[in-house]
Every structure is written in structure tokens, then in C-alpha cells.
Length: 300
Image (cartoon, rainbow, N blue to C red; front, side, top):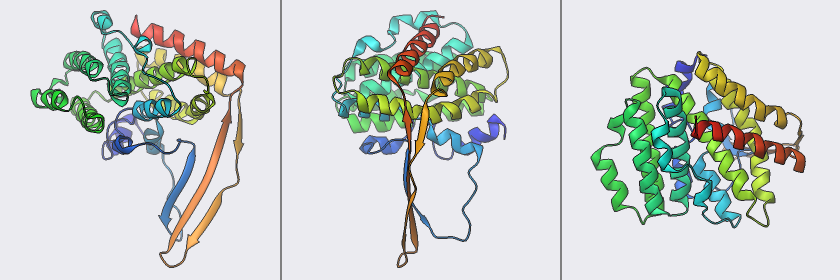
């Protein structure tokens, strides 16, 4: 399946999952490595396709909420300064940093930092305009953001709507490859925020466990980036594979699946979990590699 086909399927659910999980507005109660889904009992189970890869990329909103639950405070120093905006002149740097600023915007919104939200929104708007999707950042949308500056849940919902609209505009302009670069930029920024903030939290085991679970999401992202032709994508792919090389050194422990059937409602509940174990050395390596890649993105 080509990238255009994947994007068309993904658009029916929302923006390239880096930014759109509307459910995140009401809280995230689990990790992307845990499944506990209720499905109708049928004779056969549908085959999972490559399009599903889009739906398991963790949202910066989810990551921000997890950091908040772990006791982390808001740390502006780990975000990309908006003064860097003038550095982004190539299409690649604009797309990657639209992803970066979008992650910073989501993180700031989770911690209800209204001033920073508007600052990152303005920077995102500028990059979006230069990528040809200015219509997503309408005056009406900007006004809605200002009016809801003190309402975290409303802000998160509007942010989700915003980037759904941006993704639609990119596809309409036949710029699906840009969508993938935006996704990659947001993913790297999310990992950077997570690994840097974890250093400041005394009980950071939950944060590092979550970072360990990014292994599967990274593999999906690599699959998506590999469908895009061009030197820009090849460079990003090479960097993502550096992170993957460290993850591949770690162990994956699969717990036995648990299945329960409600014969009255004819519903089957399937539960299972994959534990991704990262050693202290692997965490340190990932932190360093992500920091290097992120530095290259924000200061090309």
C-alpha cells in the first residue's frame, strides 16, 4: 500500500496521529502497548493492514498527560524557541518543525500554559502558510483559541481539529509526503520532551516505561517514512533507524493474552500486554541520539 492510500484511510479517523486523538481531551488511561478491546464475536477476525500503523503513533497530548501524572512540571526550556522560526527556509525544515511546534503546542496545552500555546500556535501558523495550508489557521480558529485560552480541554479539542484540517489541506495539495515529515518531527520532539523531562522527575520509571513502549510506534513510523521518495525522507529515515538500533537491543516480554466472552451480549474482550524493557545504558543512548537528531531538526 502506497503512502497516498495510507493517508486516505487515515484521514477518515483524523490527523496523522501525532496530534489528533480527540479522546485525549478527556484523559489517557493506558499505554499504546496494552490492548483491552471489546469486539463482536465473529467467525473470523479482520486482518490488520499497514494502514493501522498510522493509528499507533503516540500523541504528544498523551505524552504530556503521562508526564503530568508522573509528577513532572511544565519545562519551557525543553521546547523549541520560536525565535528559531527564521531558520526554516527549506520545505523539509518547515515540515519537520511544524511537527515540532505542534508537539510543543500540545505539551503546553496539557499544562494549561495559554501564553505559550498562543506563541507556538503563531509559529505553527507561519510554517503552515509557507507550506500552503494557511486556510487551516483561519481568523475564526485563532479567535476560538484565544477565547478558550483558560480551558484546557477545549484547547486540546481545537488543536485536534486544527491539525485534522491541516492534514486535509496537505492531501488536497498532493503533499502527502509533507504530512509524513510533520509526523516525524512531532514524534522526535515528543521523544525529546519525554527523555529530557524524565531527568527532572524523581520517580521516572513510568516515563521510561512509556518511552520503551515507543518501540512499536517507531517501527510504524519508519514504515511510513520509507514509502516516501527523495533525499529529505532518506535523511530522516536514516536518523530514525539510529534510534531503532538501540530499541532492537532491548528485550520484549509478551504476557499471556486473556480472553473473556459475554455470551449474553455476544462480546469478546481480549486483553494482552507487551513489556519493552530498556536498560539504563539503552535509555542513555536513546536520550543522546534523540537529542542529536532533534538538534539537527531545529537548527538545520
